[in-house]
Length: 346
Image (cartoon, rainbow, N blue to C red; front, side, top):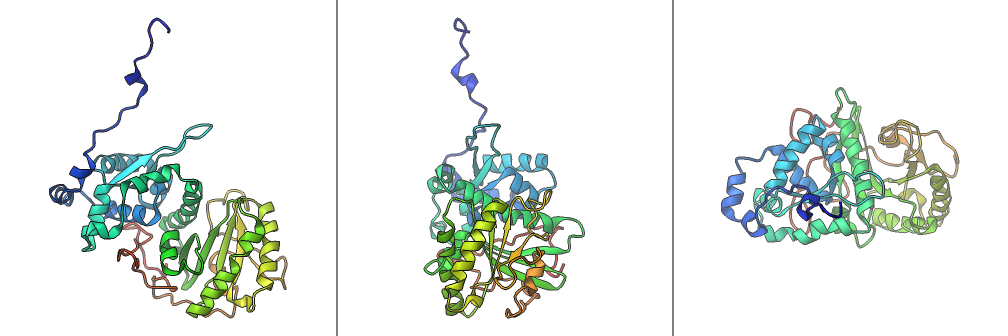
């Protein structure tokens, strides 16, 4: 009411008390964290360093048995400044909480790998600044593709497992002068394995510009001697149809189209399976067969006969070494430490 206005402090939600950035990076404080952090906590910090941002839902599906258990632990890690968080504005409803790496988490990661924290080139302002990035939705969507694969890996009696996940940043540091995919992954299932570069399409680029990326993938295959399939994930079936025409035309212009094996899928294909990239939803790009049947993810391992079978005994990616060439930091394993981790063979 006008005569009894609500105090300003009542309009703000409760914010847990946290240390300053300077205090959270001291040797004494990081030493005290050593006895409080679990292997899963450290793994989550490494995941956030690698992939920049994860939502509450994504963190729950890759590492915790329930949302309540995850939220309780995430609140504690937030208080300890291992992680930071923000909630984007949305027109309707409420967006999930988004988590990024905080200063104590970066210091813990560096010490764990025997590095100086400055070697990580971490800045808290840049990490939390993704909240204002025009690529936030794209980054979250790309990460959701891979966290869905991790969630599938964690299911009881799951036949497959995601054994490698590289971020866009790691791919860029290895071969960004040629091509910059949105991610790299490898999936093992029933003694077979398939690897791919991901192009996560939001429908914001012209189809011909997406097709223009194929020349870079062909150049990468020529320079490395390794042919890696490219999977294109699009939002709708209509967009997929338009994009396939553009990709077919661009692929025909290559000197050797076999250097860029491709398959596409749309998020609205197969009702009830939108969040599962492993089901029969992938359509290889083959002009000789304009409408082949949709394949499961692992069936792509045999979709291109000219590709040599992958070594299923190794979970390591093939295009380059694992270590980040800029910081020397190893990538996190896709599965969190714990009883759910299984042998890549399934």
